[in-house]
Length: 178
Image 1 (tube, one colour):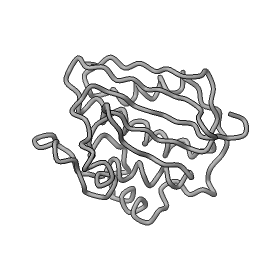
Image 2 (cartoon, one colour):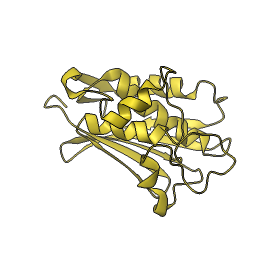
Image 3 (tube, one colour):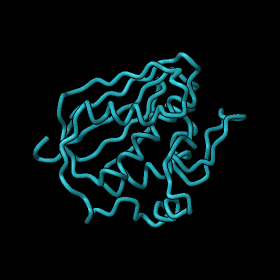
């Protein structure tokens, strides 16, 4: 997917970044089992595309239903950021594919795009606060998006990573209901 600094909804007071730094972005005690669906992801895709001009074809594929224990609002931030990054760092008219799957007791959400990619040397670094990939010069951003995504995903007991071709994946423990 994209490089750091994507679209993350924030309260606007810096508290999200502070929570991410303190590991409180999605406290495990607040999680509930929620069944997710492709339709729900499609709604989030539409929301993430607002303000992006609709210049990209976005598709969603995967099982009809998957369940994870989650803080719905915080995971919405992760989804919107990953999709927002894919759109932001891809050429107009490009495609973005969101794939959901269950693998090894986890629910994986992968966002694939045909954008500039994330150089292998930057894949871990862009997950740190205020860090951006070396290939994003001239593209606005603060280096907080993937940092917050990592904090939220970790608070859910999951993991997040970037890979080639341009792809970002978040994996969360699947609920017994999944």
